[in-house]
Length: 640
Ligand code: ME8
View (cartoon, rainbow, N blue to C red):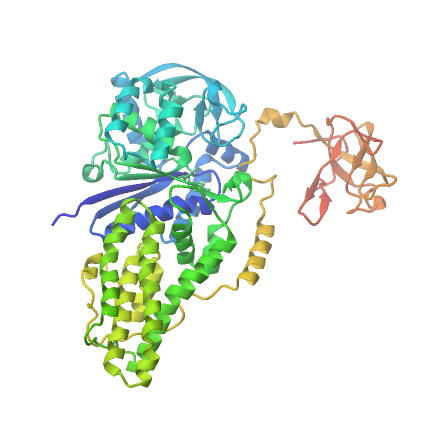
């Protein structure tokens, strides 16, 4: 029988920074859904990738002194490594610099031009480069980007426009007829009230002030607006407008675009309008999940509050991280990351509940039956209650996953685990053994082994390594689907368990929290080297005059532990400069040294002493050291 299809996508990730645990959230959720659907009999296509064009990437590459392609190649490798580390089972990884994608985007623009859905004009308005978003004056909040709160720039350039306004009524009608399209529901109201009701304006969809993008085939001065380029990935990855479009025919429209809440707007307004213009069916659902917060803020590189997923996976194993993200963060709303909650969740659910159940059961089978899983005799009411719980769980988990709630699905699966642990306490197999009640002991241990089989099969989408390990311990092979959950009692005769090591080791919370705090301290991003620091142009940089200067004299400033006052030779001129490096240098050591001076800094009085410039120093938190040319250079020479 032909399997039903299921097409699920993550957003494609910006190749303009390093990746943190917040980024992993979308991908891990999609992975659990994709794995669940595969096990549940669907033919799944799970797409992820990287969003590699745009002004932001071009600027970051320039700042790093590499070409944009070299820049995105490095980040591509990093993200592929990250998804490997987290066990992400995507079916395709798309890069927007892939040839087939670029060609599809060009064909889309040509099609839109031919049918008069785009026209040339001039864009004048605000632009947020980190978000790659256009904003009108009235949409700004305190003059800043309403999405990320960063500076916006006034932009005026010749652009092509997409007739987005033309699709306003059709969009509203579509939302009305498909109330599940934007989920959760609150996001639908947000879209309608904040964006649709004020009136949709035509959208600027090309840029001319930089060139790292897909060139428009009919006007090569223009590159495609990065959001149109990016959104098109969902169809170009399937072969849309390419020679082989069999995947497109099979999988489009998407069943689910999973996205963070800040990009719902692009996926529920621009994307469906574009698809309408292309005369294509619309995706079935766009789900806007909440953010992973750190304290009160969104976890993000620019806020310097990121948690490194490589570090966490290295310390605890990927399933601990996957489990935490899927179980602890309430789906749909924001959730705060804390090390404390990660440790508490792991110890309570994975070590105490799941780990104990598996180790106690396999230990007792080993001890009482030489490792061979016994066959059951008659089931009691107590057994039947557990059997009913196991047999009914797939249906409940299916309903949870239908509403995309991994926390509920895991809570339902763990009911088996918790109930089975209680069953051990209720039946006390060690007493049955002591009393020589062999038949009952056989049944009890068989029921436990079956409970573990049910739980471990259902856990595969969420913690695949753990499921695999549990099946290894049970002496069975992890099944490829849920078919064998049709009935309790499938473990046949002669199955030999292998207790082996613990599934999870208890984390010593006090010790671990100290370790993590230490790690966070050493990992703190240096604000100056942060790749999300505000960008400046070469003209901005040129405003800062840096010159070499020779120290003629240096003394402590009276009544100050920190300040030194310097007389500096700068070409023909002598300058007085105050610098806060007294804790790091003896005045006599400085005499004769060459330093780098910011020479056009406004003069200021520091502790009553006039200072005309600033001596450049590097600081690493422990020391402050002055910057000096690598070879001898006369004073007054330009540094650039
Ligand atoms: O938005 N918590 O890419 P991106 C939860 N290129 N999710 C988070 C998060 C956090 N703290 N930080 C980021 C883009 N994310 C575009 C998409 S699609 C056609 C183009 C999520 O790298 C974010 O919400 O900024 C988004 O879903 C994903 O990471 C990629 O974000």
